[in-house]
Image (cartoon, rainbow, N blue to C red; front, side, top):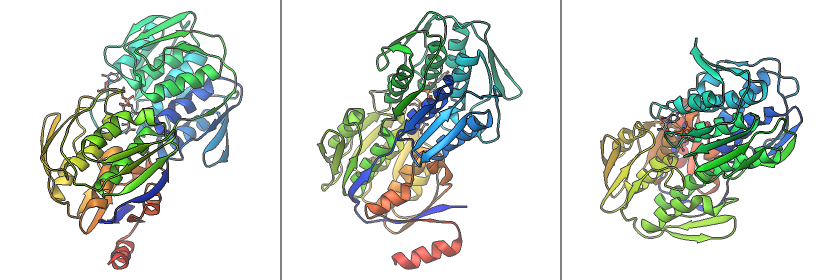
Length: 430
Ligand code: EPZ
C-alpha cells in the first residue's frame, strides 16, 4: 500500500500552480453528455475522482479523447446504455451527477448509489425531491437509483437544506425540462456557478447561479462548447495553510482570490500576512500563530472542506480555539490521529476545542478521508521527525501530484510503497 513519508521541519517556500477544481470538473464532465455535439474541456484536474467518472462515461458509450493531461474532448452521440453501475463509480459521490444529466437528456437513468468520503450521513432526499418536482419517478432498488419521466416540466423547488449536489443535479435536469424552474435556497459555491456558466455556454438559459435563487428556462437541446474549469479553491487553501503551519512563504498561482476570501480572512486572524494580485495569493507566516474560532458554513462561509486543515494550524496556535462543523456530522475522525502527534484537542459532538501546543511530533497516521488526509500531511510537514501517512488513495482522489507540488516548495516528502522504500527515505533525510 502506498504511503507518504514526510520529514517535517522545512518551511515551504516558493510558488505553486493550482489546478482545475475537482468539484467543478465532476458536474461539468457529467453535463458534457447532455449534448450530442462535441465538448472540449480545459483545466481538468487529473485526479482519481475525475478519472473514475470518465471511465463510467466511457462505459455507457461516451467517446473520450484526452488531448493532454488537462484537456479532453467528449462526445455523447453514441450513448448506448442509461445504466451506470461499474464497480468504481460506487466509490465516488459525483456518480449521482450522471442521474441529473441523463434524466435531462434521455428522460431516464439508473445509477449506482453514491459513495464518497465517509464524513457523515450524506442524504440524497433533496435530489430526489427535486427530480420528483420536475415530474420524474424515482425509486431505489438493488443498489441503484432509478429515475424515469414521461415529461420533465419546470417547477418551483424549495431546498430544505443548502446542498451543492442537489442544486447541481436539479439544475442539470431542469435545463432540458419544459418551462421554467426556480430553485430556492440553492447552494452558491463557485462550482455551482461554474456549472451554470458551462451549461449556458452550451445554450442553456440559467440565471442567478451564485445567489440563493436560481432560475432556469428549459431549452429543447444543447450544443457543443469549449470551456475552461475554474481553479480549485480547496487545493489553493490547503497550500495556504501548509505555508502557515511550516512558517513559510508560498504563492498560490492561477487562483480566483474572491473564492478564497473566507480562507484568507482566517489566515490573517491567526497572524499570517497575505498579498493578493489578480490571480495569485502570497501567504507569509513568520510570527507565532494565534488562536481563533471557526464555524463551517455553505459558501461564502468557511468551507467544510478546509476544516481539517485549519484545525491542524489551530493545534499549533497560542490559546484556545473552537472549530464548529455544521455541514457534515462526522468530520473530526482525523483528530485522534493528530492527538497521536501531541495535539491537545477535545471533540464534543460537532465541536472541537483546541488548546494549542508548541509542536507536533511525527507518527504513523491513517488518512480517514480526502481533506483530512491532506491535513495530516500538513501536520507532518510541521512536525518534528518522521510522519508516515497511510491510505493516501483518499488524498489522490482530489489532489493532483500533491507530494510533488509540496516537494517543489522544499518539503521533504516521498511516496513510498514498501518498508524498504520507507527505510531508504529515512536514511536519506537523516
Ligand atoms: C459537495 O458534497 C462536495 N462534493 C463536498 O466535497 C463538500 O464537502 C460538500 O459539497 C459541501 O461543500 C462534491 O462536490 C463531489 P451537500 P455534497 O449536498 O454535494 C445534507 C471534498 O472533499 N444533504 O452540499 O455531497 C448533507 O447530508 C468533498 O471534495 C441532505 O440532507 O454536499 C450535508 O449535511 C467532500 N440531503 C449537507 O446537506 C440531500 O439531499 C451538505 O451536503 C443533500 C444533502
